[in-house]
Image 1 (cartoon, rainbow, N blue to C red):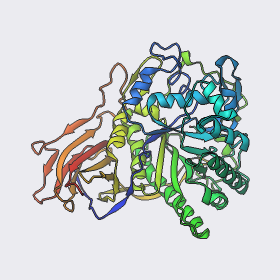
Image 2 (image 1 turned 180 degrees about the horizontal axis):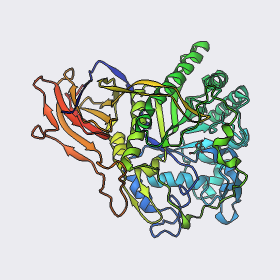
Image 3 (image 1 turned 30 degrees about the horizontal axis):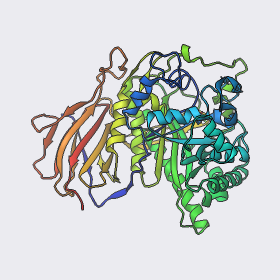
Image 4 (image 1 turned 30 degrees about the vertical axis):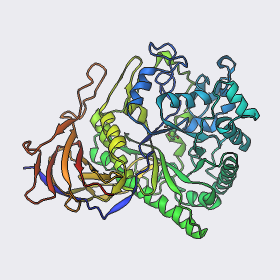
Length: 543
Ligand code: AHR
């Protein structure tokens, strides 16, 4: 007999509204993401702009709400003005952040037009590293002003009559990172003042926009959280979001640490929310700054020595640009190499999903979430083809069913501990006790007609029989249980074998995996080891 667990959800215990952009993605021109996957004029499906329509169509069907683009370290040295107008006159530049040539074949307009093709909302990152306040002002005028000024008329001349109407503007990328071009690591006050001024000016140009200021690029930065606090003190009233990033790392073979990563994310979110609220109190302000978690991921990387002092001295080591052997690369869209996450599709899907469930549990304050590699999760690709990986199913179920109100989920299950470990100087994990094997979050639709419960079984060995108690909901009845798992954790979907991992519907009380309990309002569901599960109920509509 498998292990037992219990989940209780009650209509009185609401967390907050789920923002439509919580399950979005992030795009930057590194590897083959832009040159090869998004843009390849020689691809048989390329459209007039050189974009691969197989990739566009794959993404269109997912309902991806928004994308932060372009973003990443490259943006802090990028002059958007060199990337507009006739392609043959655009300037080619070196990008010292990633040791690559930026050809600007995909420039400011193309990023935004690509988002139009996909039917998703672009969220734009301004260069606050080497870029000036004037560049930021001009970018907003070019992008969002209707016409009749130099910059807005130039946009019209460049083929886009209508303003793009970009709503969300990021005030730089990871401005605390010593690896960032034009880093503000040593001067959080200076950055906060600059962010405040830029935010004010661009909102004067377009009062409909909102802005996000950078917080720390990881909870393990030595200056966290003081850096963030100082920044917020300078600009609290003029910004709408605090932009934070984190990449969770676990050593090879340690799935417990990989899948328990969401607990470190929750600590990070709690501290950032507390900081925002501290500054609100200091300013006697009714304004609530929300969290934009606009880069996140989970990966497997080898261990290093545990450094009790979180020493910053080797921080530079983690960025390969300091390797003197490194040469500048030209990413040729026609000759792309395919990068994939090490480990099977199912492991990748679960490690990302666990972070996404953490965001859902903090939906009252985390309003934007952009998955790094999210485009590949929604539409896996190689040089020629596209297909669906396991992540596609998880991510699209969240986009579709994690809507309305996030509900508190009381989970009673066995737990495990993650002993402290170190990956490098910026990734030093304290011991985490009491990680539940069953990870869950829940959404109740706005009209009150459907309740969707998302469950991950983090155990590699044990099946869990979960008693789900929804007895507090009027007229609650079971609709379906969709499970995703793979007997082989190393298995991957591919173009040739796209159905290696696909969801299965487990429904009806005739199936042993789901049975109505003798108690009304309770359902027993069995979840397999290392599985993702969506359990759906209908509830009586609220008026
Ligand atoms: O996605 C890789 C990099 O991670 C991004 O360029 C940067 O913002 C972060 O450090």
